[in-house]
Image (cartoon, rainbow, N blue to C red; front, side):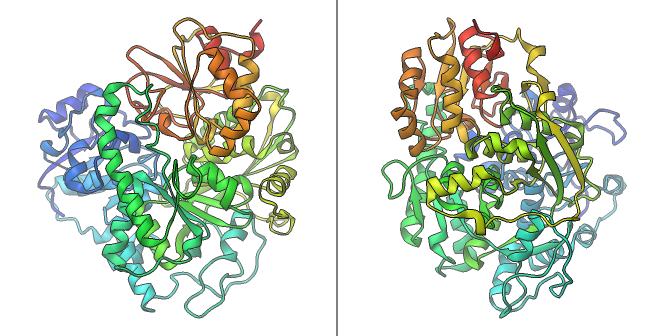
Amino acid sequence: MKLQGRILHLVEDPDAVRAQLEGTDLPLDHGKAYTYGVNTDLMISGRACTLGYTGDILGPWFLENFLEVVPQDGVKNGGFQVVVGGHAYGSGSSREVAVVAHQGAGIQLVVADSFQRIFQENMVYSGMPFTTDRGVLERLQAGEDVDLGELTAELPPFFKAVTEAGGLLPYGTALLEGKVTPTYETQRLPRPMNIAEKLIAARAWAGDGQPLGIKSVQAGDQVLCQAGFRGMHEYTTGMVMALYREAFGAAPIDRPEQVAAFEDHFVLISHDAVPGFAKKARLAPAMQLTAEMVEACERDGIRLHGPGRPYPPGVCHRIVVEDYALPGDIVVLTDSHTPTAGVLNTFAFGVGSSAMAFALRTGLVPVTVPKVVRVEVKGSARGVLSPKDLILHLIGDPYFREEHWRTSPTDTCIIEFGGPALEQWSVDELSVLTNMTVEGGLMTGVVEPCSPIVDFLRERRGVDARELLVSADPWCDYARKIVVDLDEVPLTVASPGDSRNRAPLAEHGEVGIQNVVIASCTGGSLADLRAAANVLQNRALAPGVRLVVTPSSAQVERDAEKEGILELFRQAGAVVTPPGCGSCIGNGPGIPLEGETTASTTNRNFARRMGAPGPVWLVSPAVAAASAVTGKLTDPRTLA
């Protein structure tokens, strides 16, 4: 590759970004700080994602509104060939369209200090060259024709094999034809393993004709594992199945009874409380993507969840916990919040569209064995501290925010949650911990065997989980062990821009709030609704405050209605919607109006993530309800 275009530096200075768009190139030694965590919502917005999934459609929308200075077509028309970012490049969603948008805008190489796991995998699987070596920029500017194969040579064996095959799906074709063997050693000696390593090793592919499983794995290995449940939703199913058809034709899906699609992201766009500007921009194209999903499900025999569909509606992650995942499983969905299911002692993680198409046909999914941080939780929640407070406290710690665990560009990391304090929370509540690990730049989270898992599966699914649960071996390896005493964890919020922007609630009690959202896979469970209702009972909303409440599944809706919780919200003046996850990504009630500041129980607060400008603070359900009562961020214990 020779540099025939320009280099776009994604620095924190809006004027410097604007100047580049207007034709002024930054020197390599510009001395400006790069934007931390350039996320997938910035690369391609939720609104643009409704339009389709090809480069010609998405390229004009690449980085639109980045730092509020990049216009539509700004990057594409700027003649940029290389984009340069800072740390945690590609934070956020599993949407492979973020990579497609780069390609559609003319970008041929991505250089950054570090990449987030899903985005990096999507680049490998779809053929986008990338590197953390900034020396490549000097070579390009010196006129050198840089061999991008050099970048491939630096990748781990599996990534290298995929790249040499021309992408993950051509590699899958070769695998199905018996032309590839494992890129990793399958004859291994046993070793003490943590929970994640045991889950991965038990399901590792050992080659054609060989029984499933190998005796051990360790951090940094890249293996293929048999996937259990696989899922997708309206944003992704069309792209997944288009890739599937292109690669595999009409070949049948592997184990279709363990595959489902979910109509959850778009079901609330048409709600009366959604602003007209959002409906105008999103409704029609969203319905087209939904139609593609329905058609694919009918053609390929895929289970379909949604309003009026054969299977009940709700947020995909909540339904996976309610109906599909089991301890010991490997679960993948085309959504970054798939780690929700890790609450059931599963290994659950988000993947892109190429990886899902591969998994649907082969039954296998690539896994980079993660480093594991053991977080042992002790102490008392004191009746008010929630798992939301704990996870915001954890992922905002410099160890996670600055990725101190990382020693190489392709490292991954997870949290293994354990300790006696887990017993005081339900599966509903504990799922917030695993769900939001991805917001800390992590692959997933997994909960050690505990009575809440056993009780939930017995009561909800009629399953005796005791024989399924997987525990860590004594003397196994951890990247780090962290002991957290809940008595020392404050009520915690995340300030606008990134979920890792942790702050004690007590330091922000004067922040005015006009929009409150209690919803999503992170904040719409029955436990979440109960916590908010307990605060709101016998109280009214502050003047000028809007409150939206969205149950996360049909089961949650039924239970909350039966307990009188939803009626309590209605009587308080809240908009109570059917199940769905629309407000989290700007597709439902709760989209900020002009001038509003939002307090939300969702998991992500990137700029414009919720569908419009306006600061978004991430809070627990109890804090959300208290803030709705006072019109400012509020500790519920201070209410009269």
